Image (cartoon, rainbow, N blue to C red):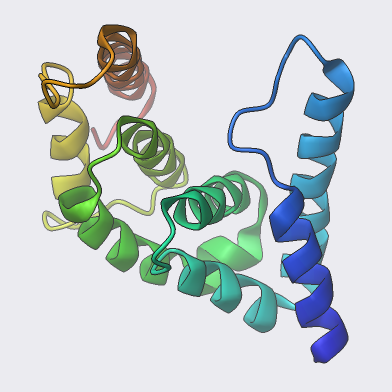
Length: 172
């Protein structure tokens, strides 16, 4: 158990919030770490995924962001995650879409929601509050001290996500 927790901790600390695409090796390493989480989630799902879900409640925004990145990846890649943990992730996301203020975090939440929509995990009317989050952020004004390009980036992410979901996911 301690070995598994140590491995998960080391891998978690290696995840990048924003891979630098000008440095292909860092991007390669980032996605290799996500693949390692696929393996850990398949072999040691309780310890790995429960730890990541717990990180979503962490005080540090950076840790919450890393956890959302990894859990979003598992949403698209792991059937074990979908079958056993997606509902827990949805519960956390419903809280996070209300509480989180950072623009980068909001963008990560949009990506997580899109992943869940594509895996048909968003099914109840209560779950569609997460899709409403995306709709509302298409015109989000943001705090007065926010960078205009970050707000614009969030708008673009939300708009393109909505267009993609509306054209490809029948339940939307």
